[in-house]
Image 1 (cartoon, rainbow, N blue to C red):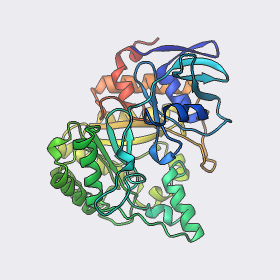
Image 2 (image 1 turned 180 degrees about the vertical axis):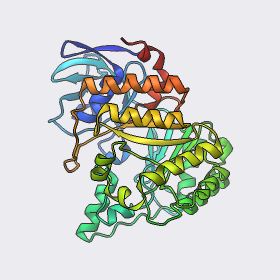
Image 3 (image 1 turned 90 degrees about the vertical axis):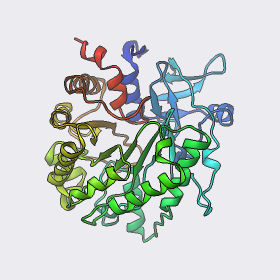
Image 4 (image 1 turned 180 degrees about the horizontal axis):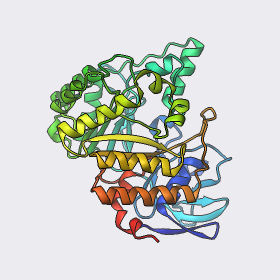
Length: 386
């Protein structure tokens, strides 16, 4: 059951709270870092992507934006971490167990920090293994923190080096899976390329290195790949043959007019049709729900997102809602105000879609910035909401 809480005297549930925390941000008080920095996984370093757990175990990324945030992570009367909203108590929370992961280096001396992040209870993610060529051309997606950083580097003439090799990735997987035994799920994401074959050659090399060094069979959950759709869709078959469990070619915004404004590079260079063709190809050749597409929720009307999610799910493709986090980004054109009413429409509609098509998203415990697994776990009670 979802845990109910009070916010400004109104009842909300933990998925409502997760969405608000991600889009509005939180201020982490210094004493929280000082008290729990050594005994738990929380850090001022944004490269560590710290997270917290709400009372029912829902995992939430800590978007620490400073004192301007309406939410505050503080110390409770028992010295425990707790969440406040404008000074009023909302919930006791918990923090992940400590890790030595970020102190490790590969055999070449490359730090794990900056290459990979630990999410929630059981996810190892590689969020940006090479620079986005769309961003380097000044066509970054407006919501993408990594792409906008690359775009700024490109505009300023600063060289952006990403020295990560397939062996570096594999050694980090080995440590997380076989040494600390933290990770059951591995997410691999590069940056969009202008190569018509996408990133398939690079990803196949990475998967082979993981098998050699860490052992694909030792990954108890799934390997999820995020890639640019190639023009030759048969290239995608190679990813599954090399060990991928699911492959995502992200559409991000379903509304075509908004997608043109928000994702100018994708709109010009790959286009909606190639993404859909890739996803449909995977569903037809690999079976239902092995293809996924992320949507950035909060930038288009809920009805538009849900229309796209329903279309994909009906065709054997998993829609994955990732909450828009505007912190530190340029202004993004958006026709909606992503408030509680918006998120409640999204979660109920998505629960109905997941339930109708039995469309199970990846993961087990949930992801830091996505509502997919949380919604799946609670779909029966969300569908029942009047």
